[in-house]
Amino acid sequence: MPLVDLSGRIEQSPPDMPEPLRTDIEYADHAAGAAQIETLLGVPPRLLRDGEGWATETLTRLGTHNSTHVDAPWHYNSTIRGERAQAIDELPLDWFFADGVVLDMTAKADGEEIDVADLEAELDRIGHDLKELDIVLVRTGRDAHFTEPGYLALGPAVTPAATRWLWERGVRVMGIDAWGWDGPLYLQAQRAIERDEPGIFWAAHQVDLPYCQIERLVNLDRLPPTGFRVACFPLRIAGASAAPARVVAITP
Image (tube, rainbow, N blue to C red; front, side):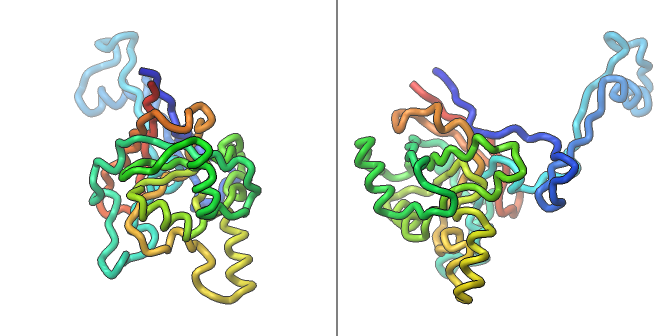
């Protein structure tokens, strides 16, 4: 069955990437591997095929949110609904392998809200009734800029009401092909400061619900609206607020 990769590549960040957002990778080639084998085990390169040892890579910096990743409730707040929020390694596996639904929100401008009425209209257009554990993927088209520095400043904003509406219908994993679920951070910050009140910045993240977000998806344009499965298992990092995931759609 055809597989569609919905994950961006994990690669070395350009030099001008701000430190909190950086990914840094050290590469050791086959010659370095041969030298390491000789040092550790005493086997000289002449006893290895073509004189080569193993190639290895070391991730010297990879934030759990710095690639296509799954957010856990612990990312949003320390408590959710009065209880300690779950970390990424504490969530049920069946959340991360389920039927997928793509909602086309490409007409939305950067910072424009995606609200309940938008979800209802799109679900009506594609003729789908949400069921428990559907994985809902919001297509904005901003993945076209995935490798560009300005990617983090692009995308519409899913509202707290829309997030809650999905959750009330049994959705526990929802994703987007933009940098974040709530829209560009700088626009959220402007609104929060201008109005000088809580509940504006990061509002959908902090909606007090135990759910997961997949952020920075790609290739949602290659999927039908429904009729496919999504596998989005996050790495099992103890106590983490998120983890990178290889998100794959399984199509008919």
